Image (tube, rainbow, N blue to C red):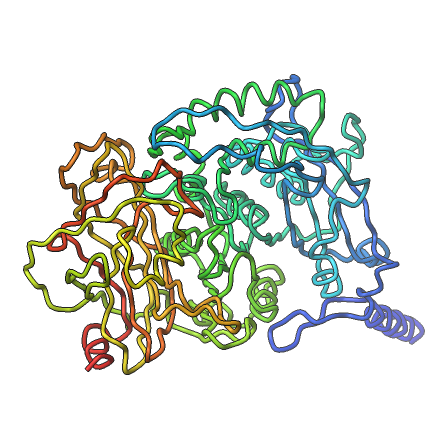
Length: 605
C-alpha cells in the first residue's frame, strides 16, 4: 500500500514538474511566442569557432569560422533541445568605405582594357561574443535557437573571401555539421578547448537577404544533413547573372562599375596579416584571370560561382522570396533556382512582391515553413499554393495564391514590329512581312526614361500596342528574337518592355512604367561561352529572355517594346555614335499573357 502511494506521489510530482517546464507552443500550424522564452535578459549568448575542412588563407591550419549562439535559458536549466535558425554573412564586421574610385571605369569602348579600380582596406568592427542581432527577436521567443557566423575571410573568421567559391558553401556546412556533432567547435580562435552543441535537436533552417540569402542556398547545395529548410530572400544565385547579361558586361542596378573583385574588396574584413596573400591568390590571380571584362563570356570561373550547377545533392525545403522590381539582384536569380528545385521534386514555394531589393515572405509563411520542417508539426504547408504573388496595390503581407509561377493560365503570345522610327512604330499580333529596317544611334547621355518618354528621337526604337481597353495580365518570361547589325565590332543591346504613357507624377508607383527588361551582347549570338567580333553592317540573329515578371497592365495603357544600345544605369558607356540597325521582319517579342492571344485580342478590340 505504501509502495503504491509513493509511486503515485512520484508520478504526480513528475507531472507537476513537467507542466512547469517551458516548451514551444503551436497554434494554427505556427510556433507562438512563449512567455518563458521572450525575456531577453535570460537568453544565453556565447561565441565559438567551428573548424572547417579547408585552409584558404594558406597558414597550414584548417580555417575556423566565428559563430555566435543565442538560446533560451531553458536549454541549460531544463535540458531543452531546440532547432536552429541560422544566418551567415560577409557583412557583419564592416565593409569598405569609399567613392567611385572603388568601381571600374565604364566610359570606354566594349572590349577595351582600362586600369583597375582602387583597392580599399576594410576596418573591422564588432565585439565578441555578439556577431549579429538579426533574427533573434523574431525566433528565440518562438522556441528557436539563433546562430550567426561570419563567412570566410570576414570578421573573426579565418580564410579568404572567394565570392561564391567552394569555401563559402563548405563554411556553413561545417557549422551545421557542428550543430549535429560531426565537426569540432572551440572556445577560442587558436585554442583547443572544445565546445559542444548539446542544446539543439540538430534541425537547422537558414535565411537571410541578398548575400546573406545566397549563403543558405550555398549550404543547401552541399546536401548537408540537418539543413531541413531554407528561406533565401533576394539571393544572388549566380555571379555571372549578377555582373553579366547574355554575354554583356552589365552592372547591378545602383552600382555602375561594380564587378566581382570590387565586392571581394568590399567584404574583406578578416585578419590584416592574411589579406595580402588572399589578395594575391584570389583577387589578383583567380579573379583577374577568370572574370573577363573584355568579352563578358561565360566560362569555368563563372560556372564555378553559379549555384544551379551544384544543386544535385540539395534536399532542403526551399521557400524563395524576391521582388519583381529588384534591379540589383534581379528576379531571375530566384526564378531559375525555384524552377530547378521544382523539377527536382523538392518541397518548393516562391513568394514574389512588386517592390525592389529585399522583402521577406510574410511572417506567417516563414513561420509555417520552419514550424513544419524544423519542429515536425503537421501543418500542411507542403500542400499550400506553390506561388504567392503580391498584386500591384496590395500589402506585402497579403499575397495572392497561385498554383505555380508562371501562372499556369499564361500562354506565349508573339508580337511583330511595324515601322515608325524615329517616332513610334506598332507592336501587333499580325505578321506584316515588311522588309523594312530601322536604325538608332547609340548615346548614353539619354536615360532609358527619357528615351521611353520621347515622341521623336533617333537614339531608340519604340513599338507600341494599341491602347488597352481591358487589363492585361503578364506572367512569366518574355523572350525577344532580334535581327540586328552594328556599325562597330561590338555594341550594347538593351531591351525594355514598358507601360505607356510614362508616369512621372508625384504619385508614381514602382510598377507604373517598367514592365521588364534585358541586356545582351550581339557578339554572343551563337553562344554565351564564345563571343565573336561583329562584321560592320552584317545582320545577326539573337534570342534571349527578359527578366521574369508578373504584372497587370491597366486599361488605358499601351505596352511598348523599346530597343536601344547603351543603358546609362547598367552597361559600359562607349563614345556615342555607334549605329544599331534592326531588321523588323526578323525581330519578334513573345510575351506570356494570362488567357493567351484571345485575352490580348479582347483587350484591344
